[in-house]
Image (cartoon, rainbow, N blue to C red; front, side):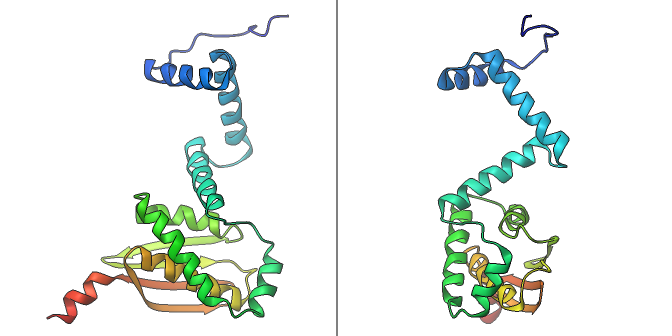
Length: 194
């Protein structure tokens, strides 16, 4: 029985065919096989999750970059235990600064921050980002995190936002909830010179 049984011709733009052709050469796979694999995987993502393929790709790129920077998954219970007994809060800020610098250098928009936070806080049930002028408010709800873990996470966020040119102006931390407001640093300089 032929593997081409039931095959149909589907119009695809020449640019995409050219890109797939280059990728097929690089991987050593026939174009038809590569297209079948790509479509099959995209369909699996779409049917097994509520994530669209383009969203899955963006998340993969973020995860790949975080992995390159040394980010790792750690069980929440272990994280809480470590942080409840830790004095390494300055290291959390430094990690935030590093991730923030990479995020800024790669030209990411602040709106991409919400996607990044959803990945960094895999245990979060809600991640909200709102902007009012030059003030950005972040809210992360992660009910499994201890107050110490939320505090350390807030310090990491503070470093991250500092690298983006923002300064912490207010925060509220409780068990499982982080609310932090940041203002662009240049506004303070302008206001202080008046």
